[in-house]
Image (tube, rainbow, N blue to C red; front, top):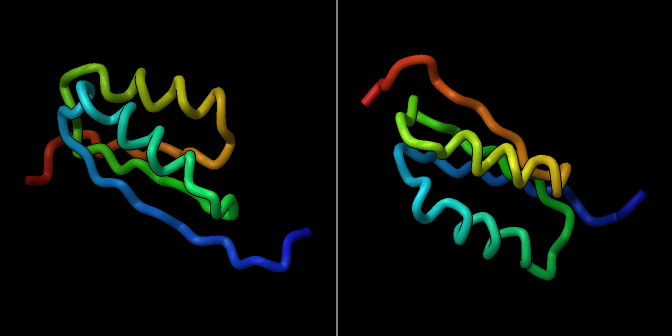
Length: 72
């Protein structure tokens, strides 16, 4: 087990399928590896979910939470 603390990152999003992959790539390329990344989706209507789920299949540090309706 690592002696480094785990850092939890939260990324809020809404209909950002066009850029969320790029953001996830940048975060996951950081040299500090002890992270968890939770994407909090505010009921996107584009394919944000599918993109994040594809990252979840590749990297167990990525998590996804989606609100059932837009709260904004």
